[in-house]
Image (cartoon, rainbow, N blue to C red; front, side, top):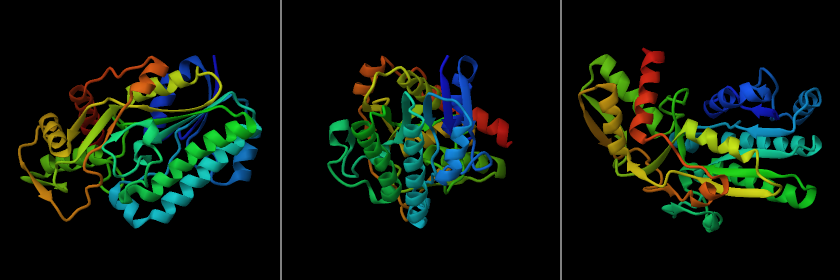
Length: 305
């Protein structure tokens, strides 16, 4: 049994992590500001001083979709940077065994199509996620610097786009899958015959079912000392238009898609090379995209009907 502080337990990833670890471990949670404002170091320090933990899984993040990143870059950068700095400070002061940090794959340079660890700093992130990605690159830099200076072990896990029940589905703050499920379901409910798809529809994205991602994160808790950095991925992508058709099938909506070329579409293709992470953790994804989309759509329709 491990003593774990789970930060961000009310979010999409955090909820799924909590469900997996709660029965077999001693888990303390920070759901959000109602518990403690982790962007405020003094408040966070006082909270941490009153509980006992040896591991941290940090699922906290202030997130948004492509449009949100263009409109609120300062918020995304400053809030996420504060979270990262404070989490590492607390981890050091509590002398924990390991800090696990899930990292979005947008930290990779915008010019790349295949994301390999060796290429992480070969260029700047894509402009559509630039400031959010910088805050997550900061987390990776903190990982290596805190290990070198303070011998604090941590694991930066760069993950494919995750999806599943409890995800974000608001059009302006979710990724493409969440937004499409929302729009296609609403079209069915309202009898609409057309749904807008942002950009050309040719953008290639890779999707990791959240329970598979959680399994990988939990395996990280058993890693030896170090500042670990590796990808967790599926290795296979799908175009946004193909994804829309898959969602349409499971929602049961009959209509057409309109490609809105005036909207930003982000990087044209991105796939994660997860071979290193698979080898280190002895892990591989179990849920197919078709099964995962069906489960996600079923959950959404049940909870938003």
